[in-house]
Length: 400
Image (cartoon, rainbow, N blue to C red; front, side, top):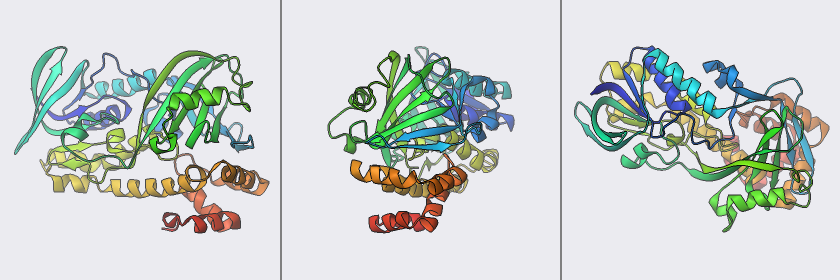
């Protein structure tokens, strides 16, 4: 069996790439190991407006989010956002993922469920795959193999393409029994509840929420993210807030951040989480993954059609990834400066600074959940305390 392109993984980024390829006449096969698209669920389920506009799956939106109520370790609250101005969407990931993959199939792409690659050999004229499909081994040949197979990418590991710069761990519970401001999410910081990063409460409509935590392994100091979640639920400042919570489901998974240096070899490449495209500031991967597809699709199609799929050819196709990597590095520096490096006392000091009316106005005017660095640069230019903080910390990337 032959296809021009085989995509391992039929998540939203793999599905989006398959749609763009099939729309342009490229024979495309998606290979998905699970029995159902959109399962298992391992994500906060936030999709930014630009990404939603690319796929027009508004029917999957559970709740629009206008802003965030961000809490310091001692309880200082900073509101970021404006009522009536949607910053992001909360979606049903199962319906969203299925919608994206359905678009690919409508465009002409093929889908195999309950299927996974077990062997791949690159030859001079293609990639020879052995795929286990519903218990049987099927031989498939393609011109290009693309891994969109997530944080633990089989494709990335098999072809030794390296590792993302960071691998965070996230934990989340679906809950009922929590009340709050429907169009606003909440964030909680501090060593007890989310060392180095933050915890979240995301409204999903009908009085339901997603409560989650993510952190880096080195910041957990032997604890698990589940224990951090329990610390949030039982924290003296917040336990009354969460007293009526009833858990419906729990999820746990890795969050890869930092585009790998060389996400390609002859006739092989990786994208999305497999390539480390998640944002270091929020862990979101759908928006960056869609941007990645948009950035390479025209040159990728030309390379496929012209049979120019050697490592050097794919390096040209993947050239936009360098800009993504630089953007991630600067965002990571900003995150480390504000959240990851400070202790709880310093975090409280930052929150007091951010809570000043003139700085809140700056944040609400300049802030962009997808692109935090421009806001950081504005703060550097216009807030003396922030500039001193950055200089003291030595975060040179902010000045690049």
